[in-house]
Structure formats: structure tokens, C-alpha cells
Amino acid sequence: MSASWSLDGADLVELDRLAQRLALVLKPGDLIAVSGPLGAGKTSFARFLLARLGVEGEVPSPTFSLVQAYASPRFTVHHCDFYRLEPRELAELGLDDLLPSSVTIVEWPERAGDWLPMDRLDIAMDETAEPYRRRVVLTGHGSWAPRLKRLQALSAFIATTPYAEAAAEYLQGDASTRSYARLALADGSAILMNAPRQPDGPPIRDGKPYSKLVHLAEDVTPFIAVGDELRRRGLAAPAIYAFDLDQGFLLIEDLADRVFGAEIARGTKMEDLYAPAIDVLLAIVSEPTPPLLRVEGHAPYRLPHYDADAMLTEALLLTDWFWPVLQGRSTPEEVREAYIDLWRPLLEQAAVTDNTLILRDYHSPNLMWLPHRAALQKVGILDFQDALLGPAAYDLVSLLQDARLDVPESLEARQFARYCAARSTSDPHFSSDQFSVLYATLGAQRNSKILGIFARLAKRDGKRGYLAHIPRVARYLERNLAHPALASLRAWYADELPPLHKLPPLIL
Image (cartoon, rainbow, N blue to C red):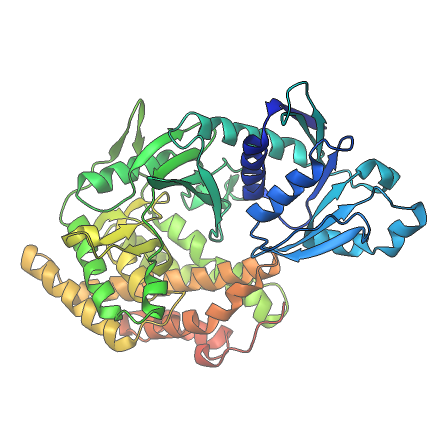
């Protein structure tokens, strides 16, 4: 399987722009084979690509050394020139061992014979009758075929926006399949979101995959709809400048880089950030949420409900992933069934209590500090495409029991009390005691889910960095389980897991 994309008459500026677009989608294991006659611009393109990958300093041609290695901020890059390659030298270079963990750029790939991998991107370059212009043909082979089609679609989308000639800078994303880039012009910038529709995973219950059972967004429609609703309420969700629903591309407002976690690391007091963030949640719960949200030029979007089955499916990530990692064997069915029987009545009650718009990932990585703005606009909200109608306590516990940074128990207690006081003032039917049960229940559910997700990310996806957060999440879970209303559930965790504050390091 292959796919092609041709650019006729590309000058150096356009070659650099192509390198920028390509740099956004590269990952370790990729091989880029750049071919063409002498003077076609192969080395110029390789230098553009290395620069856009963040390689600083001089980039000499590897004609004589055959291979040059560079450390970019994202991965190692190997730049190869096989013009002088002798067949016996290829094995001596050791590239087979390097390919899986780096990006490899090869000039004169035809000299490598049949060594080139089946999954690769070929870039053929040639001069044209016009000086300084090149004909460029990109061909994606194997897994690169659909990736090249998407890269072409991404470039076409950008070309329809005012940022067609902007410089593109890769931005580190999260654990999702979405990717981001900052498009910068002299007079401003915007964020490009690349969110391809994901194929359904294997069915896990009632013929449905996990994503459908827990109501995860399948395309960018919820992001557009919920963002519009948040802005209508005067909250700082990024404005949307352009979008393509079918392809999953959005161009959105750039809220800069002052993420809560980074602000705290720079010395900003947590209370100064968390109090305004609480005010945003109070503003959300103060207004009823319509079940249908507008999407400009398209049918309205219906918010799913955070039902008990969805909550239970998430909580089961602990028995499906975390328990087996700790115990070294699959969870016995009777252990899993006892877990379900304890959780179900708690979650059935939670699902129908104090419902409002919940953003679901309302925590430090997704909140921006915008101190130059007024009131509720000081808190920028980045991630809300998985929003639901559900219990208000869920977003509060997401914020005050942040999986990515330590929230002191004293700060959590103060802000929880402040939230409850405000709710009691505005709603005579609000009960702090009942809300505390809901908060502990959803805190235990969310932190159980996160322990399972982090174990899954490490074991299945090789993303071991998330293991560092497990002790913190376990401490939050232990804090929730201490609530008297969760005594039976607490006994299950005590019987089936080591003491949560003494969890052994996970070896995966």
C-alpha cells in the first residue's frame, strides 16, 4: 500500500514549510528516504527538517562520515548520506539497532539496496527549469501511506486559514492521540489541533468498546460544542478560528504557556490559582445546562450522561490492569464481582445526584493562568471534549486531587469548604454532608480509574513515566476511602491490595 503527494515548483521557503509540517508528525522509528540527483536540494531539505525538529547549530553533510547523530528535544535523529557507501559498510553502521528508537533521514537511499524498511516515507526531489525551484514527490509506503494522506490534508487545512504561511512549532501533548502545534505569524499565533477519529477498540461489554461505554469523544464535535457553551457563559475556553469536522482539524486561540503546574513550579501560590478555578466550577453549576449544544453549520450536539455503567466501567480499570500488575496474575472473577457489587449502588446514586456540566479533566495540565484577564476569564480551560452531564463533585475532586501534582490536604479542605459555603448560599437545598459523600465516592472512583490507566499506559503502551504519579494517586484514594460512607468498599481495598500508602514500585 502506498500514497503520493506532489509539489511542483517548490522554492526554498516552501521546502522549509514542508519540513515544518513533516516535523509535526514524526516519531521514533520513522525513516525518511530523500532521493534525487546532485544539486536537487536533498541536503538543504534535511537541514530544514533537522532545524524544525529543534536541532541547533551547524549541520554538516554526512558524506564522509556516512551517519551523523543529533539530539533533538523529542528524540534522536540520524542523518545519513549513502553516496559513498560501500555495500559491506551498511552492516557496520549499526543502523538496524538505531532505527526503532530514532528518526532516520537517508540521502541517496538507492545505494542501500533492499535494506530500506517497508514502512517509510520517500521524498524524491529534482530541479525544474526555474532556478531555485524543485519538483517534490512524497510517497508513503506501508504504514506511512495513511499518515502521508493525513499530512497532506493537514497542510491543505492550514492553507485555508490566515495562518497558511505561519511557522509551525510542535507542542508536547498528553496521553491522548491528539497532537498540537503553535502556528506563529509576526502579529500573533494560534494552536493547531490534530485530532483524527480513532477506530473503535475491541468490545469489552455488550458488544461495545471502552470508549463508547464511558462516552469518550470520537471526533472534534464535542470540543466545538462545549467550547461554545463555555464561552457563552463568559468562561475562557479558547476561541475557534477554523475547523474541519470530518478530518478532525481545529485552529484555536493560543492561550500561551502558563499552565497551572508550571505556574506553581515558578512560585505562584496554589491558593491564588485554585480559588479562581473553584469560582469557575461554581459559575458552571449555577446555570442549567441544555442537553443540546450548538455547532455552527452543523446539527446540534447532545451531551451524554455520566451514567453508573460508565462510572463502573472506568472503576474496573483497577481490577483489569492495576490489580494484575500488583499481584502478577489475572484478577479472579469472584474478586472482580465483589468489587462490582460494592461499587454499583454507590455509583447509581452518584449518577443521579447534583447533575451539571462536568468537563471531566479539570486539573492542572488543562488549566491556564491568564492574570491579565478579569474575573472568571483568569482561568483558561483547555480540555473539555469528553464533557458530560454528571455530578458536580466530579470536577471538584479532579481539581483538588490532582494526579499530576501534590495538592496539600489543608488546601483541599479549605477550598472544599469554600465551595460548599458558596453552594449553600445560592441553593437552600444544598447539603454539605451529602455532597461530602458524593465527593468521596467520585474521588475513590476517579483515583481507582487513574491507577488502572497509568498501569495500562505503562504495560500496554510503554509509557512508563506515568508510574511516578501512582503513589500520589494512591494517597488520594486512601483519603477518599476513609469516609465512613465507604466503609465496605474500604474493606475490599484493604483485603485485595497492599496498604495504599505503602505500594511497592511497579515493575512492568
